[in-house]
Image (cartoon, rainbow, N blue to C red; front, side):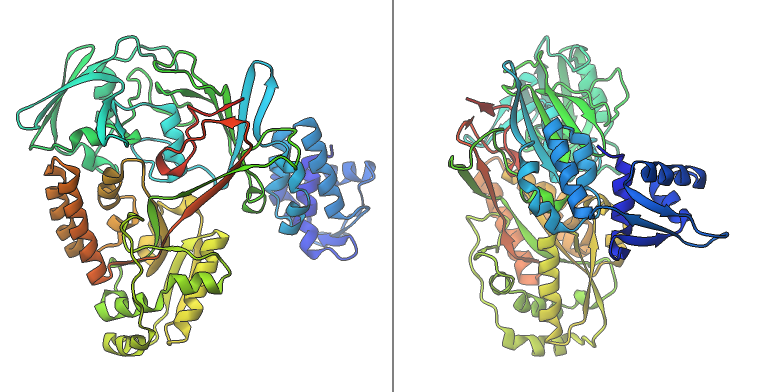
Amino acid sequence: MKDLSYYELRAFLYPREKERCSTFKLSELEQIWFCTQKNVKRKMKKFEAEKLLAYEPGRGRGNASAVRFFLPFQEEIEAAVKKCVDQERMDDLIHLLQLPIPKSWVANISEEILALFGLQSKSQSKDVLRSIFRNELTSLDPAKASITFESYLIQQLGDSLVTYDFESDTIKPHLAHHWVVADNHRKWSFYLRKGVRFHHQKILKSEDVLYTFNRIERGSPYYWMIEEIENIECPSPFIVTFRLSRPNPFFARYLSTHNLAILPSDVEFDDSEWIGTGPFRLKERSEKKFALEAFDHYFLERPLLDEVEFWNVPYAAARQISFHIEGVQESQEYLEKEEVEVGFRFLAFNFKRTSIVHHPSFREAMYHLLDVKQMYIDVGRPEPIEASSYFHWKSESRQRETSEIPRLLEESGYEGEELALYSLDYLRAAEEAQWLIEKAARYGVNIHHVPFRISDFYSPELDQNGDLLLMGEVASHDHHLSFFGAFKNDALLFRRLLGKKHLEKIDGWLDCFKKEETAEGRQAWIDQIEDHIKENNLFLYMNHPVKKRAFHPMIQDIQFVSFGNVDLRKLWIQ
C-alpha cells in the first residue's frame, strides 16, 4: 500500500483539484506532514519516482508548486480500503477513514469496512469483538468521567464495593461480600472479599478503598458522593468503615457507581494504563483504538469474549457498522434489538449569563415553539417518544399553543438580540438546531448555531458563551441515583447552567429524597422536582431516544446494561 502521507496530500489538495491538477506552497505541506521543507521535497520526489504524480517545484522563493495526479482520488481511496480489509490492517484503515473525504465515498465502500467489524474468531480458541466509537476519548478517571461512553469503559475495567440490582431494586455484594449499618445510617462497615486481584496482581485490601475515596477531592464532579464522610477507618486489611456526618440511607447506592471503582493504592492512577479489578484489562489505548482483554483472574465469572476492540471511526462510516460475524451471507436474517433509553433530549437555558432567558415569558414562548413532534415530521424522522419527564414511562404529550408566542415574546421584552445555541457536532443535533433556528426566526427570535465536539464538553466556553444548549441526559440502570446525580454532578449541564435560587430549591428536595428509605418515597420528591422544572420551564423536555442495533443470530445472550450499552461480560458466539 502507498505511504499514508500520500493520501493526506490528496485529501488536503482535493478541494482545489481541477482535472487532477493542483497548486500548493511547501509551507502548507510542512504543516500537514509535520516535517521540514527539505523532507517535503523528498516526499514529493519519492511519490514522483513511484509514478503517483508529476511534481513541478515553484520557481523562486515563496512561489507555488504544482502537481498532477495520475489517478482519480476516489479510485485510489477505494483500492486502498479494500487492501486494508484484505490484509486486516486496521490502523491504516482507520487512518484513511479519518481523512476529510466526501461522505458518499464511504457509502460506496461500507461493505468492505463492515467486514472487519463484529465478532471475529481469530483462532478456534479466541473470540474478538470489534466495535466502534465516533469521538475522541476524554477522561477515563472515575473521579472525573461524566460522558456515557467513557463511563461504560470504566465499568469494564473496574469494580465498586457493591452493585445495584435493577430487578429487585436492592444493593448486592460485590467487592464487599457483607456490610453492617449502624447509628441510624451514620456508620457503614464493609467486609472485603479475600483474594481479589488487581490487573497488576496486587491483592485488594482496605488501604485501596481508603486511597480511592481520598482521591475524590473538592472540585471533583463527584465530591457530593463523599462530602458527608467524616472519616474512613481500616481496622483490618479486609474491613473498611465509613462514618458520616448525618444519616443517609441512600449512601450504599453511591458506593455502587463506577465513579467509585476501587483503584490500587500502590500505583498512581494513569488512565492510559488503567489498573483495576474489572472483568477486562486495558490492552491498548491510542487515538484510533481502545482494546480490552479478558482478565483471567477476575474474582467472578470470566468474560466469554477474549478481546474487545473499539475503533475510532468517523460518523459517516460509523452509521454503516453494526454487530455481526465475519463471513455472514447477506441472506441471513439479523435480529434487531430496540430499546427506549432511560433519559431524554432537552433544550437548556443558561441562567449563568445575563440574557433574555431569565424572563419566564421568554422561556414559555420557547416551550410553545419547540414542538418536537413537528420537528421530527419536518426533518423526515419517525414519530418520537415525546418527553415530559426523565423517565419515559411517566412522560405524556403536552399541548403547545403557537398563537401564544407573539404575546409572550412581547411580554418578555425581547428586542431581537442574538442568542447562541450550542449543540454537539452530530448530524442529528445539527438538524435539530437548524430546525429550531428557522422556527424561531418566524417569530423574530434571532438564534445562531455553535457546534462543539464532545471533547469540549468540559470546557467553560459553553457556560460563558452559550445562551441555549441542545443536549441529552442518559441514565445508568440505577434510575434514582442517575436522577440524583444529574442535578448534583458539577460537570453536567443542570448544575452548570441553572440559577442559584433554582439549585438551592432543588438541593433542598434532593436532601429529603436521599433520606427516604423506599422507592415510593424518593419518587414523590422526583415528582416535586420535575413539576417545578415544568412549571418554570427551567429546561425544555424534548424526546426519549430509541437505540436500535442489528445482531447476527449466532451472537448469544445480548443484554443491555447501564447507559443502554451491551453487556460485554455476557456476550458470546455460538
